Image (tube, rainbow, N blue to C red; front, side):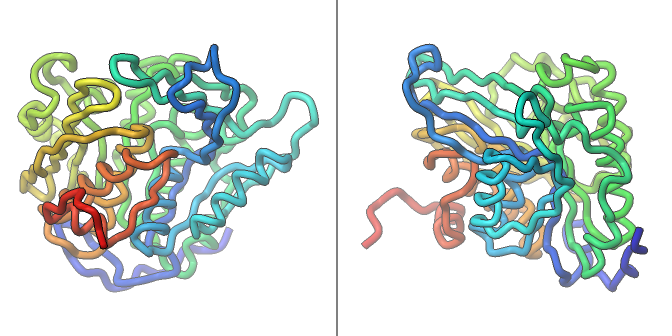
Length: 371
């Protein structure tokens, strides 16, 4: 493999050593999926679906490219068949550069690009999410599949991955660790979105195995994203009953930070959204972060939700953008909060917002008509 680039001079901001530039502002490692969306119609009554291209790790790269104008890439699996081509075209349309390990479909049962099924629900009827990840190509990825030295050769400022990809198989977690180590050698800041999904871990590992795998990853992480339930189930950090108290109270989350830092001392920032669901279509929305010893809480607002999928990735994107741009800690949290809120007003999992609209909402903008 190509040797990684020599680490360049960095600038310190919010406790993070940030490179001033490079070929990529952010590289994400994760699975690409396509989501079938019948809108407000339940699947057992659906006659048609929209197709969204998604993936928790990919969404961050796509949002940072399309809305925030950053140079991003996705490291993932790709299958040579029509679904793969559909996904690859959408990735290119979002301005994200791909680095794929390519698989050939056998014409019968795989390997496949995973399918996520998610109706939007409505009012008192909750959304329903289920998967078909049978013979998923991304689950076949493992250490040694990518030349990190070549990918990072021109410089990379930030490397991101997440718990959804880690949950896919026994080899994806070690691949994330390999990528994190290479990214640190290249001088990048590293982030990890816990995104704990009990269904996915339950297929092969279960909760105990999940905590073991994630702990090995987080040893290499600078910025951690996840709520108090993620911290408890993904990291084994003790905390309050996950269903107790107000979902908008940042106290439970901030109260767990000391334990996170004790267990993972390299972590410099931890952030999450705060969401209280009154109905499928009506949420209260906030955000909180601990950044280099400082607690930051975003405002709380009411959301009229069109499609809630991807809101958390929208927050992560805006938050990472703020940190990369050298924004103050409070402004970075507000940018994440604002972008995540706006993302819930669009169909699909990735952004349709503009940077101006995100900044305006972060400053307290309204929904008055723009003429």
